[in-house]
Image (cartoon, rainbow, N blue to C red; front, side):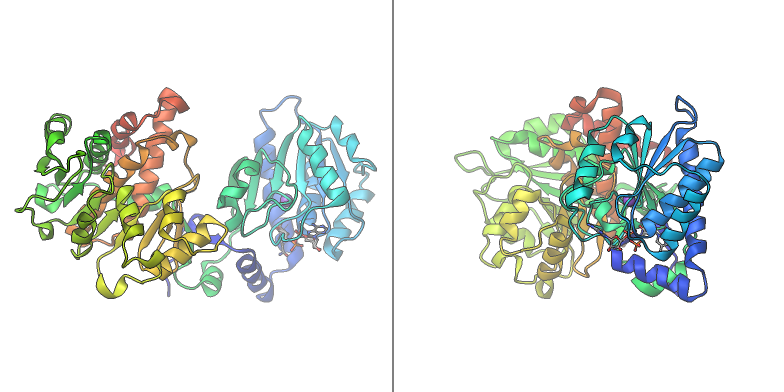
Length: 519
Ligand SMILES: NC(=O)C1=CN([C@@H]2O[C@H](COP(=O)(O)OP(=O)(O)OC[C@H]3O[C@@H](n4cnc5c(N)ncnc54)[C@H](O)[C@@H]3O)[C@@H](O)[C@H]2O)[C@H](O)CC1
Ligand SMILES: [K+]
């Protein structure tokens, strides 16, 4: 029996959701009963959401589509009507599935106003989107497009049932035009499209409404380890090596070697080192150009700083002769490195310890003749994880032949063909493993879109990886935790200093506060 996962971590495709729901129906759960149960919970949620509004109760305009999303909306309309909410229904298409038609007929019989013109929705304070739900693939055209365009221009608050109409359930693409939601109530299980960059601007606040789907039905369709998972605070925190045992010492808390920096980019080495410091790694060794040694000694006094011979331009020319790469639990290469010394990549790739490559470490890899655009799988000659943390530009240079149009699928293809663990940074960071599994961090902030924040993530992640390797823990969950922790640090700093106040140094100082309650 597979280990039961918190349903909040599961992300499904439209086909998987349909297959799961079909299992419920095949087991005897009537479709109409599920609709009543789900829509009843939607109505309760809406009542709570609007309870502080004025005027109370607000007038709701309910858009009803031809399928069961429309059925949900009609049940919501009816139940709120009985609770005393002014309701108006607008149904752009005459055709409807039988269950939806029955709900429409009953709502009409109750005297709930059915609008002939969508323009009459302007008297409402809230618009509820029950046009289309999961399984959308067709473009929104004609009258439907005009309706959504008009609704999006109105001042009302807008709430979507399950997924905004006009969003492709799996890719998140806008199918011509999409309902611009302030709130999206995702039903049962998270849908893939809600995590794709393309949809982020139309989702508003996203909530999942549970409707008691049995784990057995989820596992029967998705298998014991669901391929797409959402990183939750619980899953991220549970993987961290916290709280620490009473008796421990620094060598039991991981040894990390961070090879970074150049005279031109000294700050990147500092920021990565500060990220590593925040991870709690036991011993941090920094290999930097000798001219940076005083800076790093001053900024990260706890670190052992190896002064490396420099090139005339101030990059690392080589590692010190007595630097034994095998002594470290993990190595990170790249922040501020420049591409002057490709041998640094060759040397570190040969060491069978977990290796985190970022920035110029990735650019050196992309240029390495053995890499072959990521199509030469590294698994045969590396058993330890190779962790890549590209932003989209670095990703394109690493995997120039990939055709997948969306970050999640692109990362999955890259990981499975290269054998590397790929952390593709973006509005929603996706982490793909060679086995095809994917983790998505659902909560972040544009405050991270600035220089240095990636260096901090590299240090934080490499520090956690070193601890995991030292303690013989699985590596991938700590990569997930690092991504979550990094974003939470930025959100926390943003709360304190505003979105423009999240510089990389501040971010590195805020990180420990995110897990302070857990030490
Ligand atoms: N699966 C269930 O029984 C339940 C699902 N829940 C709710 O129902 C929707 C999914 O319902 P479904 O009927 O499969 O899909 P839609 O409601 O999205 O309707 C699809 C319907 O619309 C037509 N259509 C699609 N795109 C277009 C377009 N661009 N132009 C015109 N027509 C279009 C399509 O032909 C179909 O007929 C789910 O999201 C939940 O809200 C219930 O919660 C529980 C029972
Ligand atoms: K919808």
